[in-house]
Image (cartoon, rainbow, N blue to C red; front, side, top):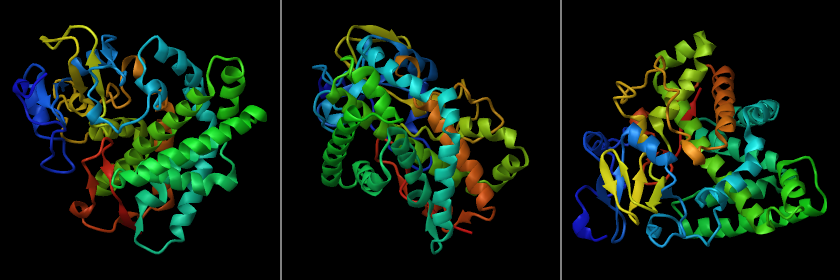
Length: 397
């Protein structure tokens, strides 16, 4: 592909308002799929319509393998082969590894984790209540909650928790790439050491169960186990943390919606679905490459072409979600694609939902007078990252 192929704006698309979707998404949805210019000298087809995105997410001809020779490598953080585990594998290899972890994140298993998640949430809010005001809710609660939850699920010992949290925070800090690389290496080394300890002496945790069932039997190598753990840590942390912060911000910014939820707790599920749809935090990181020619939305995509699948574009498709640019907790948003679709549908969806449910109910019960400490337009937003979110959320009570 050459730059002469470019018939559309550069990707990622830019937001004119940091808290609204890029205006160009609506223009793209009104036309068949078109190309955008990627960083470097590459182009890709951008899919923004709900039907096209849903089709593409389930199409085996669109590969997630970042070792493919046509993969647009400049888009993503350079990582060694297999470092991101089954996230970047195609079926049937993807399914083999996914089946190993999927039972750990079923709705039934996640429900059993509710007391643990609740206890962690209560402890974090105790610390927040004792802090000087205003407080950055994001760093005090929404960032550490999913980190500590996944650490407990893995079986990270209490004495290692502080270092584990620090490395995880640095790993996800895209503003300081050098520190992120160091944290990547430190986290990998720690997970390597912890998994070897569990191989020697299993306990009652996820890491031990994977070790006994798959590593000892030879179905899973030690290195792939470490990569799998790192994937679950990263994928399940930043997205959930940002969604919690954005959800709390939304309810503080819309007191009428918060009042409705307080008056009718049965609205919690539709509220969460609508906020998952509206914010669509996985904004720019769903990339594929066509292994053979296919047609999407009436457009032929040749083999070897890169494809960007816009989940925010699909979740704001007016033909599926009328008035999509507004938040409406009374609409049916259950068809949103925030957790994906098809073979790579997020296995951690039930855990993320449970964390959101506990976070929203506990925060507003514990702090009935919680409010923004700055005007809404002064809440800083991170728009130039693969996972959309807030840089901080100053609150008081």
